[in-house]
Length: 278
Image 1 (cartoon, rainbow, N blue to C red):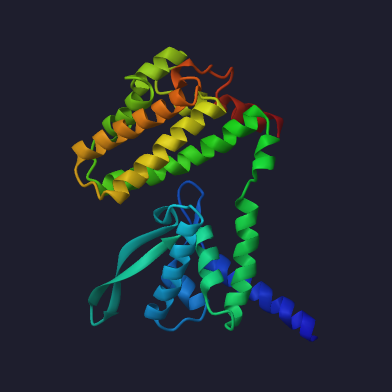
Image 2 (image 1 turned 90 degrees about the vertical axis):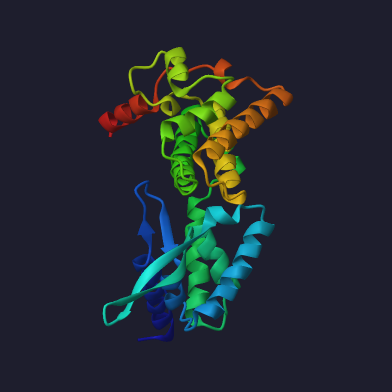
């Protein structure tokens, strides 16, 4: 086997390694666990790898990204023999977090160099530039923003759960009430003329989805940043963020969300039509 073929085979093997340790959640979002990534990058000691993670977090923050969105600390119970377990710390990492980690890892390790290529390529595949976004049709923008709100709501629900939220309908209604000048999800659905239990987010244009995505992401960060741990405070925080987003739209001279037109077709209708044509 030639040297070039060996290098190509080595690259493919290591890419397969990163693919094998990849996990996918219920919304189709890929993620990795730090301890599994540590082994793939041939780090032997967790403490040394924690230093790499720490530097990656700094890089994330300096890039104006929320660290908590990409590095989620979690506890795991592992078996240490004789039917005994102990708790260890791990991280749930986004693709971007993995990219930052391999950029801050020891480049002399061959898997690190290969990981840099793998995560750079994979991260770029998931990105959409401003120019690319601007070229999308309104329908395409709606689909793109709706996917982001699905992922955002999932993350928000996880944060709310940790804040001891039990009544999620009430929690989400507080956010809507803040953003929509007192309207609940049911009020919005009635105004839009939707059927019973028809998803309101599927019946929003891209601008309205963006406003809601901002509400969702900022509420999640507030819950985490302020370590809110009661349902009452979580509801108040969601309502407050909704009002802040509403005021920002008003100050910018934008159209209030309840005044934005309802699209002719819901995203569910669009999906059905596309599936018929495929």
